[in-house]
Amino acid sequence: MHRLSHGALPLITLITFCLAQTGVFAVEVQNSTDTGPRTSQSSVVCVDVPYAKALPAAQRECVQELFARRGKPFFFPSHDGIAYGVSWASNIRTLYLWADNQNENEYPLYVCCASTVFNRIKIFDEQGRRMLSKNEQDAVVARKRGDSVALSCSCSAWIPLAPHTMRIVDSAELSLKYNLSPGRYTIAEKYPPGPEENDEPSREALTGMNITLP
Image (cartoon, rainbow, N blue to C red; front, top):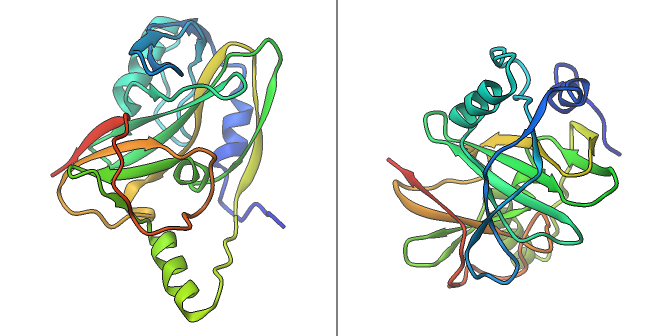
């Protein structure tokens, strides 16, 4: 059973800000045929993470400031009209998960704070080796002992995604789930999403967002 712990207000606060301004801006999207990026025409819901400094009131300046703070999102191919993407704030080593509802109807999105973002990504090093998260490493050890790992969610919420809008839906510091050495990495989509992999790290040629850890 999920519960909202004391002081854990991120997603509830996000929902409170749902009435923020929106506007259409050019965002590169990896399309499903993998033929190159295209421009998403979904409106950007200009809402930042909880407790952040207020954004500008004017829509264009608001979105520009949001991208400057949290990075411009790289979107993966859509599945049933919902595309997920990631952006990266290198100065605070934080990942942001975005969702783009390309459907004609509102989409209710369930999010577990600081977990949903990791459930939807894989990370590869420069050699194409997939890096195991801390949870995945624990699962590997547990399976070798014949045990299982129970995962919990201390903060969760439903976020309503309006038709043809994109927004930040989750965020977390990379170090929360990964121990990565300095270097270049690629963040790719994990589909279907899930908390862990069943196999050891493997080599794959994937397209995704490239980041550098100093």
